[in-house]
Every structure is written in structure tokens, then in C-alpha cells.
Image (cartoon, rainbow, N blue to C red; front, side, top):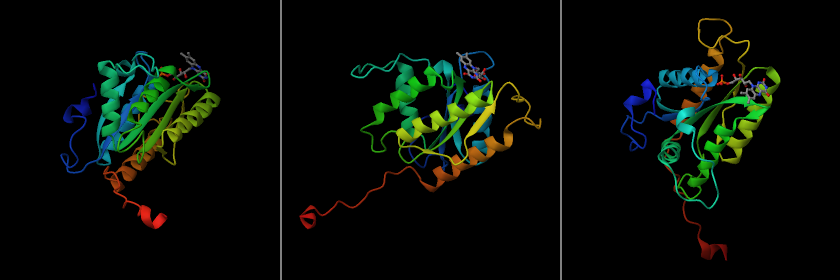
Length: 217
Ligand SMILES: Cc1cc2nc3c(=O)[nH]c(=O)nc-3n(C[C@H](O)[C@H](O)[C@H](O)COP(=O)(O)O)c2cc1C
């Protein structure tokens, strides 16, 4: 984790260590210097902190991991860290660029590693709100990519927040939150939705009563 804000946390902190502040994990960006999707992700995480979460980020350099391969069990350090961080997260914000109308291979590959949480008490993204953010240089790819990212989150049993944010990076002022064209208001709402949902579900697996098999016949 390389974000200034994440220095204050250790992923996998036991519940309660941070006064039950939800842990919101940011995943995303591109390896491109000045990546717009990474910058909006960092902004959204700062908003999540203002809403009371503690946060961490795994940006593109840390998600640049070997292609997920079914049946191959060895994991490099970054892949381990990704899976541990997702398992520890109470909420997630994902920011992808639009590449040819869909999410980037790097982000999709990282999300495929969540398969490692299949047997987890909270499998995949179960019970977690996931804010989806997309940057593309045109409105069409921004929209289609947002739909595909939300579909992946659904497939992973996550709860895409009601608001997703599709950003036309060619026409938006990413660096200046005071600029009218900065998507700050939407990112703030998205971050709040992630934190509110996480705070309402403290990350403890539900202990449903065992079904009475005898009664079921
Ligand atoms: C391989 C590649 C494919 C892209 N495909 C599209 C596309 O289909 N539609 C679009 O509007 N922009 C496309 N873009 C532009 C990126 O979505 C846009 O520049 C985005 O802001 C990149 O994210 P970044 O700033 O985080 O690197 C593409 C860029 C690359 C490098």
C-alpha cells in the first residue's frame, strides 16, 4: 500500500482496533504516470476518510500481478496482499479506465484473484458495498465500462452502490476539486454510500441458526 492515508493502518486489523471504523479499500488506476483513474480513486478514498472510514489503496503498480490461472496455486507477494486486503475490507472502491469499451485487463485480472476467497466466511465480495468509478476519454466507453464493472461486482456477490461514477477524462478537470467540472460531488456521494453501507454491516459473518434437519424431514 502506498497511499499516505494507508500508513495508519495494517490490513487485516482485527475488528474493533480502529474503533470500528470501517476499512474501505481502493483498487484501481493504470500504470500510466498521472493516471486519471488513480487520481479520482485517491480523491474518493479521501472522501471516505472524511465520512469516518480508514482506507488503503492498491494502485496499478501493486495490481500488476501474473495472469490469474485456475489450478495454479502459487501466489506472488502482491497477489497475496490483494487477496488479504479484499478479505479485510468492509467496503471497496474500484476505479478502472475504459479500454476498448470495457474494464482494463489489469483490473479484471486483479478481480479474478478474488476467486481465492471462494471458501472464505465472507466469500468473494459478499456483504460489501462496492463503489464503481470509470475514466474514459469519451462518454460511450465510460458508460459501457461502468456497466461491465458493476456486472463483475455483482458476479462477485458485491453490492454496487446506487451511484456509480462514469467520468469523461478528456473533458473533466481531475486535479482541481474546486473546478465545476471536477466530479467531486458524485465521488463524495459514492464514498458516503460505501461507508454508510459498511458501517451498517460491521463485517461480522452472520451466524444463522442451523436448520433443524430433522424438522425438514
Ligand atoms: C488501450 C486503451 C484503450 C482505450 N479505449 C478507449 C475506448 O474504447 N473509449 C474511450 O473513450 N477511451 C479509451 N481509452 C482512453 C482511456 O479510457 C482514458 O484515457 C482513461 O482516462 C485512461 O485512464 P488513466 O488516465 O487512468 O490511464 C483507451 C486507452 C487505452 C490506453
